[in-house]
Length: 461
Image (tube, rainbow, N blue to C red; front, side, top):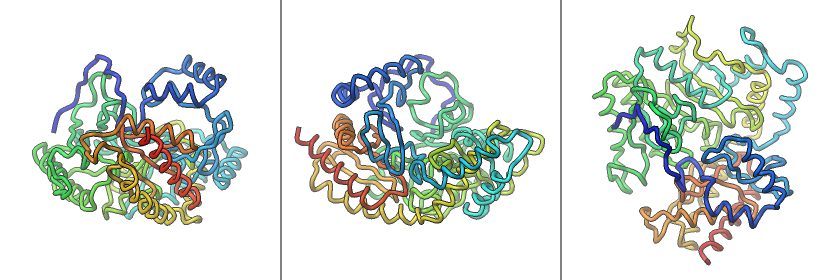
């Protein structure tokens, strides 16, 4: 464990890779721009770059989009891409007609709800979300972004326990606001911004490639035992915070969260689970925590909750957290925004009516079966990860995880883009694949074929 209340005020050095996504200042990006997009598009990108503040993983941008529908995005030059990235907001696909119609109807009657008032669609959405939530999570607050919902969860933990310390994981990502990066552990967001929140202790994640306990293939869950040790030594921790499954992807063993839950209960700490990118069916369960048989004290959702149309997030809590009373922890202007709530309610209806959780589970199994053939065909493919439609293909040299094939992974990403498949890189060498859970069997086949061809092209150079 290390304390982390201060960071250097000096600007961090440029990184060519990030745990969270592919960076935007590489020579490969520049080469793709010059070879693959028109001078007119490059001119528009330059104008975008002129007005927006620059930041890694964002501006300067990759391309300009004109349309998005279903599993596809389309750029201004008319090229369509299967979107296996989507920032995980496209759980049910883009522009789903049921969500579009719900938002349109709401726009025509009540587009905004002045604070101090409520509205029927907000109540209906809250009721539906609690109906499908894990047992015991019976209270909810809405927010316009996942990082804001995480902020509310942190405030609730302090109010409920009277303590302020947290234990969270290095390399985690819980949002980009100051409090969220304080409990997060992603270097890209923490460096160079000055002192962070006090009491934000960090421990190693349950991650086979970065395991300081040297578990190797036979995981002993020493990382979970370490959380127990830290909670005992600190003695005054309000909450343990973690992503049920890290969307890089990093998938803990089945017993991991049970041990962490037991440690929290033993030492009087809360458990806050972040399912902002991977909740709502992606893991083959409606909530990823269902794969582990645990229920947290607080659950944070976001991204896909707004149906790929409206910004929307939520924090779900057990009844014991209905204690705020005269305080305000989430009095946000758009807390009960009727259009966002209409989108959220319609999204839950689509997931249920169209059997999308089962679709994610079945297509995920098929995808892993197909990808399991890749190591025999592709020397760069060293490991596979996946649960439902959260998948990762790890590229490395000679099957050695200590020799990540980061340059080659970047080349594979751009080779796939040229063929019509969009995804992101994480850790620099992980092809991270998160399609809509409404993906069709034919679309999955197309994506597998594109990846196969892209790997063959890069390995042949």
